Amino acid sequence: MTSDSATTEGAMVAQYDAVIVGAGFGGMGAAIQLARLGHTNLLILEREDDLGGTWHVNRYPGLAVDIPSSTYSYSFEPNPYWSRLFAPGPELKRYAEHVADKYGLRKWMRFGAVVTGAVWERTHWRVTLYSGESFTSTYLVTATGFLSQPKMPEIDGIDGFRGKVIHTTAWDDDYDLTGKRAAVIGTGATAVQLIPEVAKVVSELTVYQRTPIWVSPKPDYVVPRRLQAAFAALPFAQRVVRLTGSAILELLMITGVVHYKNFRLGNRIAERWCRAHLRRQVRDPGLRRKLTPDYSFGCKRPTFSNDYFRTFTRPHVKLETTGIARIEDNAIITAAGGRTEIDVLLLATGFNLWDVNFPAIEIIGRDGRDLGKWWRENRFQAYEGVTVPGFPNLLSLNSPYAYSGLSYFTTIECQMKHIDRLFTAMRRRGSRVFEVTQRANDEFLDRMTDKVGDSVFALGQCATANSYYFNQHGEATLLRPTSTIAAHREAVRFPLSDYTYA
Image (cartoon, rainbow, N blue to C red):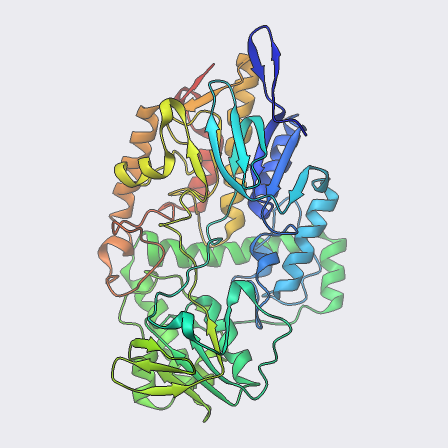
């Protein structure tokens, strides 16, 4: 494939209408929306060997969606066949494959394509791969996901460990944990799913906890085949279930987190609910204290589990809250001098959002502006969580203030609506280039900053949360601090004058 663009009357004509970086649910949603708008000359570049994003990469034991499955899907493509209320990971992978097949997305996908950067060249983007190959496109869509760059722990001696080391994003299916002495570093949402499963097969398990997590009961019921058939025959019934689940999540998010200033009671109720769950499962008051967060509910993403707390009451499972000093060739040494010999080290250390994932590739916009550098020098910001001044024809899907609500699909569909309104406006004007104005961007940033001031992130006790919601400057700029209803409304009503068109 050539990397040169054709020339017509002095203007550069790009090879593609759009290059989309990432073949997860965000990238697929963008492709579906662009195709609906008539842009069918697309290229979707994916660094992995198949589609699905996090649901392709992650295969660790216990993997499942951490909100009800009915809300974790495209509203325009419901899946009536979820086997459980919280579907296991393989079902999400199959759902991604179903969407790609139904909407004809595979023909645009290229796997094993590692994008290193993109540069705006006056009328188009030039996207370059690690191999040196490059492509040109009128529009650039970055859909690399919020949780796509694994975070490796910086612990003295870890490179000299002679046993097996497995990060949850690179699970080794061939390695047998049975009878092994294992250690897990991390107690976030991934670890909450992983630890109970690992404890079932290892001979010894030590969990190294830096920050405890708020965990509530998980109503993870099996969805009977008859009910699945009813959902397939009566889509309206599943929409009711989806709306109910979404309303509950919205209530939790808005009252307990976003509107913390006016609804602190909602936050306290959530905390008490989680404390009661812990108390039912762990009788030892000392162990309970170790597992109880000292930060406000919502500062760090909470999760659901029916067996996480109970796992720590098993005789072969130990919770270690003293920091790790170093790792030796066959053991972990704590700051207090404790030594635990292990065979395998499991890293549930999460993802690096703010150092390497905003953005995940080098993006150079108009006048040589470097997006990563500009964000770090001028605060993390993106108009409606989609576009950035100085970067024409860029749709940045994993951006500051983009994540709306607790379901990623809310974010995706808000952005799809934004793309629809923006591109329709361009078509009416006969334009091919858009750019958000500095004024509109600044007004949006000011509004989001004001709203964060009413949230648990500003008024709660979040200092000890170690939450990826906060960037390296201590600002909570990941989540959009509005209701999902407001986000959807603004996606279809934002002033068209907030953009310039050329």
